[in-house]
Image (cartoon, rainbow, N blue to C red; front, top):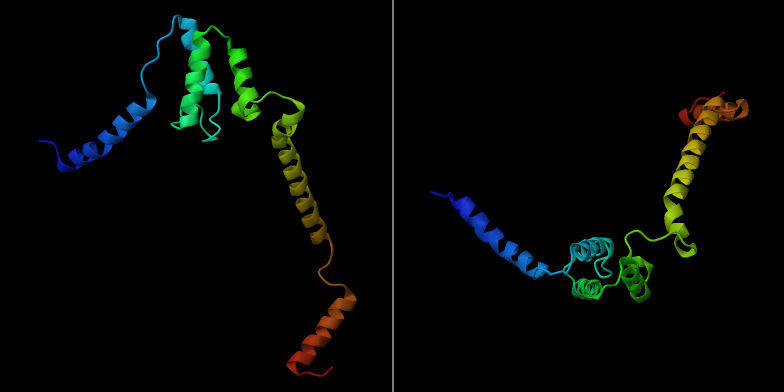
Length: 160
């Protein structure tokens, strides 16, 4: 006998599984194995411009489905991967690539991790050096100490 919890879990997960199966679509047919590999590679390297964090292979957005259909049609037409990526970049911009090329307009994108590392290291170094200098100086000068003593005596009501 199946426990009640298992039945509820199955009833809850079954529609989600069917929805995912329908979202993936029909299996695609290719003339050659090379076309299949090219298609699989491209749909995993092109970004969905609607979802922005998913490839067109992972996305269920209508635009991603359109992009998959376009890649499939261009692959079947015999176009190579560079031509297909070039078409997608021309249509959607360099953002459509998960690995954008090193160009003048993407230089900041490629350099930003290193710049952040340098800025963070410099900030850390300044904090450490600043703390060392603070420890090297006395807390109060003689004049400040005398003023503090005078104010604390006045506060407590004692006279000098």
